[in-house]
Image (cartoon, rainbow, N blue to C red):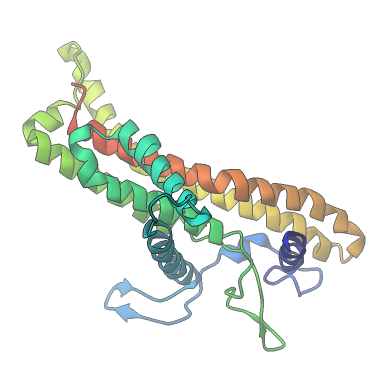
Amino acid sequence: MKARLFAAVVVALAFPQAAFARGEFDPVKEFEQHEWVSIHLGPLDLSITKAVVYLMLGTVVTIFLGLFLMRVRVRNGAEPGVRQTIGEQIYEVAQVQIAEQGLPSKAIGRWFPYVASLFLFIFVVNLLGFIPLPLTGETYHGVPVWGIYAATSSISVTLALALLTFVFTHVEGIRWNGPVRYFKSWIPEAPKGLLILIVPLEVLGQFMRLISLSVRLFANMLAGHILILTFLGLIFIFQSWALLFVLVPATLFYVFEVVIVVGIQAFIFAALSAIYIGSAIEPQH
């Protein structure tokens, strides 16, 4: 069963979007956003694109996993099943490795649901980005073209997620410490002459958190997908199936991305979010 599934994934990956045009393949085009359903409210563009569809699908799968893995009825004396074990492992990572490491104990009850949801949602969206799906928006002789795409390879998506953490961080900092004490905590102890240089840098550092959160996730997912698609695109660029050997490094890199990068990036984003919120609640200065 596993061998058949692996073979199916390799075959699906071998036919990415736009690859049917022999001799022409640009991996960057895989990340272009086109309006599938046009929705414009004045200056606001709320149109449904490929990224929006993947986010909707990721949301549904995340909710399903949360309900399926966490709502388990355990009989007295019964051995935990696979479903319960997986649910407990996810909960333990979110609780022990993310929430308790970054949040003060007084804030865990309030912010654990956020960082845990963030971790699971980003993990699911990242994982969906490596599963071939007929959601490319193109057809071949009337049949939807299968391809891979990660919504987190769009800077708008990762920036929106980072912006949530950014806003929550400063709201909680002000709520727990008051505006004066909180903003004063940004200023380190230094000679007054140096404060003119230090204060702007500290303020800039706060905004750099927003950029680092969004760009780290975006760049890792974008680079991984472009590299995989580039490997596969070589077959169609040179119009020779003799180049099928490139499927070996492409498949190895694909497995590396799925097994390691998908989970690590979700973990880092959620862990940094917990650390930022925790450091705002209990400033060092």
